[in-house]
Amino acid sequence: MKVKAVNGMIRVLKAEGIDWVGTFPTNVFTNACGEEGVENFMVRDERYAVAVADGYSRVSNGKSFGVCTVMGGLNAAGTQMAYGALAQAYEDSTPLLCLTDGVPPSSSGVERFDIDDAFQSVTKWSGYVNEAERVPEYMRRAFTQLRTGRPGPVLLQLPRGLGAYEEDDFPYTPVKGWRSQGDPRDVKTAAKAIISADVPLIYGGQGVFYADACEELLRFAELVEAPVLTTLKGKSCFPEDHPLSIGVRGIPADRFLRKADLVFAVGCGLSPTHFGNRIPDAAGKTIVHCTVDEADINRLYKADHAVIGDAKLVLLQLMEEVERLGPPKRKGVREAVAEAVKEKAEKFDPLIASDEAPINPYRVYGEMMEVLDRDNSFVTHESGGTRDGLSTVYEALIPHGFMGWGNVSTLGFGLGAAMGAKLAFPERQVVSVTGDAGFGYQLGNYEALVRNGMGVTTIHINNSGFSGYGPGFWGKGHSPYTYKVTPSDVVNTAKVLEGLGIHSERVEDPDEVAPALKRALKENASGRPAFIEVICCMYPVYGRWVRG
Image (cartoon, rainbow, N blue to C red; front, side, top):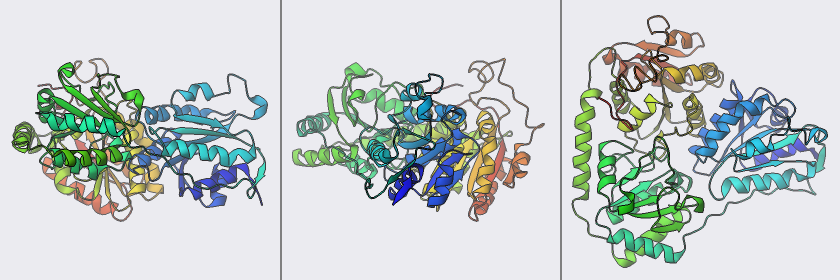
């Protein structure tokens, strides 16, 4: 039986377990999705179509993937809007599939139309389907790339009017992915080094998520009795109430990074980032690096020992080898962690309990930890102040209880991430925290929450400035010439969102933060989105930068 090329591509998505695609507003795929029973999850711009797919992929542990469709071909406005979102997915190593109209064969080679060169820099792999019967071939290649090796976005172009092909002659069977163990010799060397270290530190990244290795990381940390620091993107891959957890930044992280004589990095690239922890005196420490990508090795830091392989499989290998050699008998590690955590609490607890008005943002973050069911919730942030403050003090208890992000920082992504997480975890409480700048980027897409009946809560930390860093950080805000926005006594963002049909509240009394959040979550339970505007002071952020 013959099938149109575009319909064949959507049937492949169904065979791979994909039942929705993020999209805006029309492209060659939208009608085919409707005809084949795949939901068009429409947002308000192409960037958000990618962002929702991105957020979904990040919390799916490689078991499923977000897919988006955007306008392309001779009308490339959609792909232009999607470019920045794909760049973020590429930088953050997110596996997602982006489908777009291809330039018609008759126009191929016209430099103003072709997008291949431009998108090669922000995709793991891209392809152009030039014949209908090659649809199954290209989709096999796409899903192999999504499931194997270092994660990253994949782009496929399909030109309109490509024709049809015979499904029986060109069948599609879902593909598997391939994961590799580490070289046994490398595993033995790494295990010996970790056992022999006096003050080892485990540094876990988001590769732990993609390998579905959170349980293995916990077991390994307890076996070798070593504290665990995570990257921002790896936050929540290790329970942050565990006596070996030192979070992502701040006093415990700084202290143990300085003291460690060995750093075991697993599931992270140790790449230089603006928001990551640097390893002080790295030349004087032993670096053991486990990653799926050999390009990560010896990039920023010299690797004394490296194991190339899947984080889950390598951790299992390491545990077996440590058990064979005999686990180390380290004493006082948990006490040292508890002391550092206590010192951090002494710094932040007064801020979390603050009764000042305008409200201290740390009071909001503290109330979130009290009100949310942290065994069944998901929290994310925006780029900037909400990222630095929230990720420093919020303790995530379960895998994907928190999504950290923000190297290539496309403001507004937090709301897209929350949508993707809600699609993946419909039963969870989902909360996104934004600041003033992020709110502006998100505004149009709140309507998508209402239309799709998504019980997501957004908390707006409104300090009437494009910054939460406070005085002393590039003047007042990012710049003394640009930091001001329309003050909260002129614009009421809660009223703006109320007009869209969202449950909205403005909070100016610190004692009303928790009740407002409880009311919002109650509305979420019935599928209604909620928005809480909290009038906050521009309090200095204590995180990557210490001010005060």
